[in-house]
Image: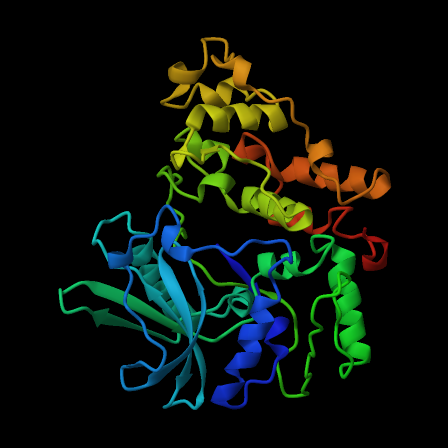
Length: 379
């Protein structure tokens, strides 16, 4: 799942032409040393799969396209003006639907419809942190290809973009200092430490300024089944070990762990992709799990259908030569050695385990000593 934060949505969007403000704001997320990327040359880009959107297009006689906000492997995202509701909308125009059951597009559409129904029937605090679809409709090309479009409330920059905006990689203190400055003196711009252009918050009392993270991407969302889910899922660099082992999985706590590390360090804990051939390397994934987590429990891996392919009868990994010498305490560099880092590492050890049954649950981590530290003491 992707996470957007609505803290950047403070730019005033009272009229359509103010979309330029939002676009400039998103652009500031790029680091100065980043080189321009030609989107058309990305490995998984196939032009025919994308719907040919043009600025000024009107969809459903309702949404007028104003600006491009971003793109991904399965969609392009656009800022639009909803003429009927007189407000802005974010339109996620998905790539061509291939109709396969594994399609992340069909999965996301189905999950969003399910969430919408749930929101109408139930009350849950989690809905406050979830961007539901306001509208889902289809576009068709002359060749008959179908493209789903998901209309939602616009949010601010993603957590990754915000993180890249800060020279130090977006530490907790960076965000806290910016929040404190903005709340005390909203007319004064927030100026990056490396001298890039300042950002004027243009804070208004009637604008949502919570700064809370919002879940926005549901292409890999799954419904929990009795007896456990076992299908192949999750993005490659975040995949939990039980998914790789084809065992029943429980992913929420694992996902919190790898996400926390990525937000803290600005990079992924695991990197088991053959970039030259754009392939997931399963033995390398297992080797990296062993490097960070230690040897897997024998009673766990014996249940796996791939046990004999990668382990001997005693649970010894058959490719020990590729196990990297990596340690979680060395991966974490943004927290200096000391009490806080020790608490953080213990927090991670509760979340990142081979056996999903051994992970802490949500109730247990809520009272974790690292999470309960006073904010002003965080590095």
